[in-house]
Image (cartoon, rainbow, N blue to C red):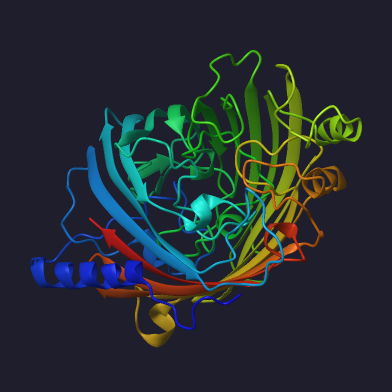
Length: 479
């Protein structure tokens, strides 16, 4: 039933109030524009597309001394959905009633370059407010900024803390855009970069310049990341590990060894890497896919070893009437393996328009554990720079993604099983298809406002529910 004929969005009104506050109170001094804080690549923008996120306007001038980095950002995303068709719901369903929610993600970035080859990075983050249906009911959830466990402390926490060392393999240098994850303004053309500490794997793996940034681009989990990449992470998206990145003129190869969480979507990592661990590999080829148009191909593979359940075994227990409903967590401690592959392509089409595509697959027989409940995904989209219409720091984009799960995973959910995200009690299976569009407008200095909309067919892979329309408004502040 449709309980409301009009949508009232107090969170969006709050965002407009914040915009007005900053517009009236900020000083009028010229600022230095920092590079983007999400994509940590030492190469120039590989797609060749002029990209405001690589040089966003900021409110305050940044330190000119290249030994230090201090900056910050605040991202507010307000979303809502009207009531939608739903003959039934389960414990982990997206609510069929009207609801709205506003998330807040604030990050303070710091860095210190010790010498020409070594630096230390430390970032503090705070995430708060709420998510639609507490982040449940969708494999491709609509807001990547939300923290899926509402019981976590709201206090600030260390998001990243790492040592970054560069080993030169050639004498010639290339220019590098400084950013919060790499302070070097010059790097050897051939080099080995090593990082150790706390970080997010998707700070460095599965990136592209069109769809990898919730601050300026898309917001859906399976558009900004490969949904089938069940990358090692705690609830907030971070892990502890080691990464090595070998870079040459037009290619790179990176490897990471990382810790896995104790339970699915858990906040605690297991510090027994000889038992519980994750290996991640990515090969990147920077080469023209179209004549005289820059392009990039990235090939990804990963393996996870953790205390993960097997869907088929959980359903077998249920069919033998040993349990009242299948429970993927109902098993003794044992180490199982999950593995998967991905492909990530981006291609410049014109001077100001680029396209991207992703494909991902994993062996869905093993429990979805760290990122989301997707076993196979295909995504594609376009991103455009506002330079086309003479607004250099604006941007726009459209994307489509289709997600799927394997037969064992389907049987588990249709029998009433619950994942850490999904569980309608029943399942009339269909692919979860999502369309997203956005427009990011640069209002003034470090203030950006971005309306957007997502259309989701068969939410949670259930043909009996939906479709769902989710309008959104994002306010981004760059300091």
